[in-house]
Amino acid sequence: MDWRAGDFFTLPAKSVSRHFARQDATFYYVHDNPILSYLGVTAAEPRFRPTLFAGDVVREELRKVMSAPGATNKNRVSVLLNNAAFDQTLTITHTLWAMFGIVSAGEVQYPHSHKSVALDFVVDCKPGVYTLLGEHIDRKTKQIIDPIRVDWEPGKAFVTPPGMWHSHHNESNEPAYILPVQDAGLQTYLRTLDIQFTFRV
Image (cartoon, helix red, strand yellow):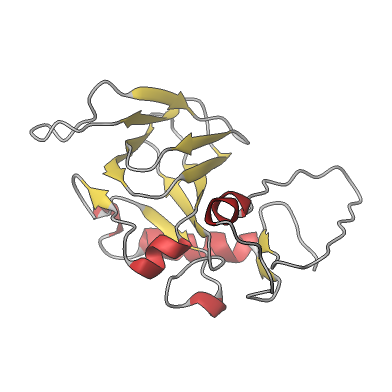
């Protein structure tokens, strides 16, 4: 499997992999051991084939979403990385959900929440992009009460705890890109992810 900067790939349980590079490379690596440990189980068999999501293809799909009618009225402009083996849950593996999204210059993605943990990886941005997180929402103003601010930096990752309201803000002059990976496969299968929005969806 040949990959380049900006690509995404998944490897199934029980696989053995070796990586080779002609120059230094860095992975953002997420696995599902926490949920397996909590359930007291081990991964006994592969559930899907090794899968590559080419970064240029993903970005082209995102461009199509951005130019679609009504895209500016959506809370989130993004594409799901859906493994064909999991068309019911639209997840990247049977346990993990992933999305490649954009927050355009000057835009705000209004407060929303979900019941899965999000490991948010900042793919690219300029200074002035940040996320606000808080446990409660003002039902009149639809704003987060006493939020914590997390400033984005390219290559930085932060955690959005389950059920916590969060909003993304881009006060820079350039688009910002983010890749949240969530332990949402089981919750999506059970219909318990419970994504809630305050404004546009």
